[in-house]
Image (cartoon, rainbow, N blue to C red; front, side, top):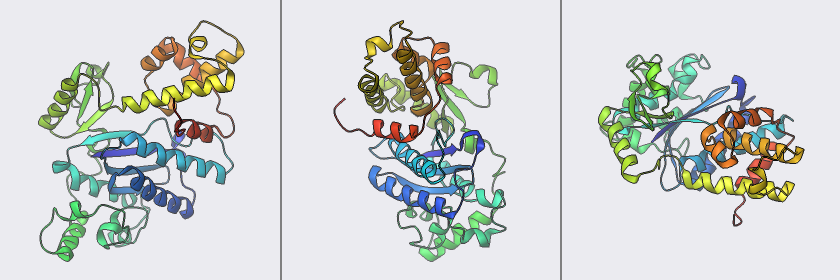
Length: 330
């Protein structure tokens, strides 16, 4: 189970009207059906979104790419804009469901109340841009997973809904101030497991893979990573496929193969191709500067500089979407 957050670039709006939100809700339904993920809680805010998701066989990255790229293409076309809509890669936190399921459902569904988009809990029940009505009114969102949430309460379905509604109203544990919901409680990095309660100075060198749970849960995840001898929590297979598609596209578009791309050549076409690939690896796929540098035979600073020099052209988002969703052999 993952708590996922995605924000508009430079904190800009990602929805301008209710039609934008309705389109996004329909896209959640479609992408969930295509990837087999379950949606337990969600909230659409003016410049960001929250989702509580359980993945199955498909990795989270597949669902999020379909969801965010699709919305960016829709938004850019509707408002005649170019460039990225979302800020870098989405943030995801692996969640220990038996402890945090209900707490996160409440936290996510109360976001519109916190932001004063609605005035009270009664209005929140009818506010269509969260999963809260889906739990209050059976069938409101048929695609939303409600049984696991409601089954944490007792009695028949009517009583369970009443208990859930009361649970949402109760203040809970410093629900808005608890940074764990947005940051997690542990980081899993190359050097082991780190509690976020430790000083920030000790966090250098750690990956930003975040876990929300107790120590035993975090240790279980850490041991599983070690057992498999690879960071299976990142979708490496998908990353490799995507990198191969991008390199194939560069060769087709500019006639530059990987050998030329990773050489010391400084022609304008090679430099432009490097900038394109650097930007795509870092800002679209979310690869680290180190990993991107290994692919391009550049230093981390070189990748960062090349990515910074790249200016997305018209229809860039559609172009990237077509590349990464090309199902031909790579």
